[in-house]
Length: 212
Length: 212
Image 1 (cartoon, rainbow over the protein chains, first blue to last red):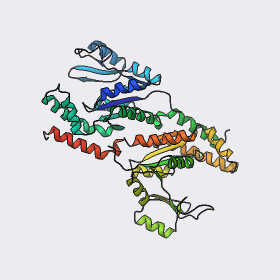
Image 2: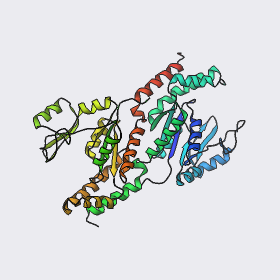
Image 3: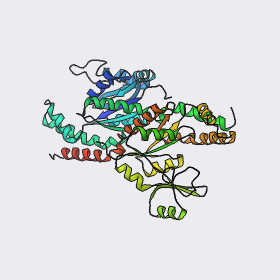
Image 4: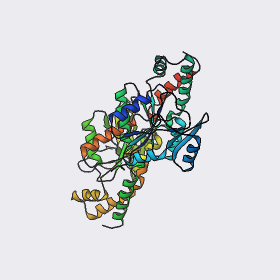
């Protein structure tokens, strides 16, 4: 009954919540997810591969893509463009795959405005203490960077109510399965079943008018 | 993490969609559901038992209950009061049970307005043709009654978008399980996790201010 298109889902959450690992888990465990790769004009960092972490391009090509309406959202941060190429997202959704966008609150709100049928999920660790512990445990970040990330998390926490669901990443596998169940439940929202609803409505109105 | 309270859920749907059987299925299969029994001033019909189909009472007691704020919603139909007693709903939810209200669109909208954290589910057969077949197959209703029910269904179909989810009752057991999954997913909505969200927010803001 549900429209067979995949769901456009946004995964946001505090730095340290484990979004990247959850995305890998979804892609590994289920065959109906695809990860959207952003396009950017910033230079690749060491180890980043074109088409994996980002599609790297120049400003001229990025602006051409904007003009051709080739991005579903984009933003300019610190002089660099970041955006979500439309073609890949549409192809994957049409093929019935749920497309994951790993983006932040501002981008998430833009997506929801443009695509009310998108699904916004916010990932959090079980507590603020646990978030702090995870950031410290990495051992690679200076106290200043950790403090900045915690301040950023405090800001981000203001936007949680804009999301459809909040999930706690305590145990990875359980959290991956929970996200999958949420995506599955979302297929039953009226906004994702307009075709079915309109059809049954028309048929019922036909009966009511005495048509057979 | 989720607040441990049960969910207030409304089950609506076309006459012939199988709501009653679904409710029985939920109560039989899972131990965390409770069915709210409405209170009414209309006379019991043959076979109806007090406290099972309805709590039967008189107008004076019903109006006293209204005055004492003892109903979560009520309406007057054809000179008779119908309402949902508050005490039972609150007790069951506090005990962690999801409370099922089997009511129609108007009541559902009132519930959603008063309790934004309630969950509205609309049940439908796979098609309008199938609904017609089910109504005819009962064999107990006259063509006029069937026509009236179909006309009523056409009216009700206008309200589907107000519901959180639409589920197709094609195969009973599968549908019971699906509703249970939807209720489970609903536990992850921010509106049902305000305590957790406020707590992590305060803790993060504490860190951001440099508290330890």
